Image: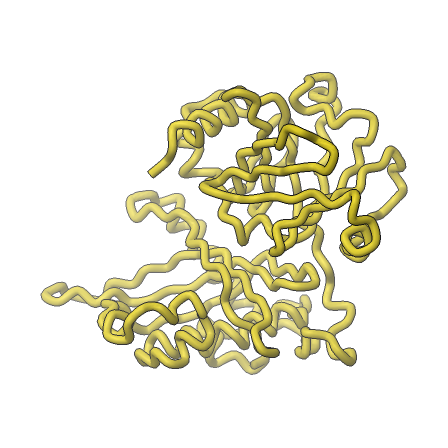
Length: 336
């Protein structure tokens, strides 16, 4: 259930950015973030020049900014006025390791992050929303996975940050010590399937097979959050034929693999005629556990069975994936 403060901040966010009814926009363009969606490296997206003089969007004299949020509850940032400087995750990690006086602490709960900077007596409270659909807000393109952070000051939003995840390519794929063991290969559509993309597919295909075969041991090995769920409950799920069709927006930030998975499954409904197949998408996060990739985040994206536009979009993406991999079922992909 939404707290009044979370709902109020979302209302303010939508009114200030797009001036449309709040709940409709929550369903169509974004949702409150969860902690795993925050962890990683981020770059501030430049404000549209037309909005630069609006205080809520003005980043100040150091407009080029990068942030890192760590699982440990620590946060660092680098800000500069040099448009040519390119900050990397390694630069942010060096701040964490070598400049402890510049490291802030944060806590995250119910879509809000509280940041305590060293030397500041008053912590900052930010609402955090994740974009789930490409949209133009405040004259700037927002992409799925982007974060909008809204600074709360007594129930009023006084400043916005629009952050985009810093992506590490699989430049170190196959090198000694790299967690990315898979090498890039050619896709059927003439593009390239990255090593990071292959790693995710090689993790998700066995997981989907385990769900379909009711193999609870494999399900729990690959998705640790399920380890507390009784086996009989997992076996009783009224679903079968889980099929992974493809991945979109694959990223690797040095610690986690992330992607949007397009997949389908059949819902078992006794007494019905025909097959009940649901095709949906979800944001998937993987991390290493004892040298193997496991699922640490699964965030299903909104779907509306009565919305024809939704079906056209998801089936179009499914067809695009089939052209990319040469198969509609990645369990049969020759790149495994």
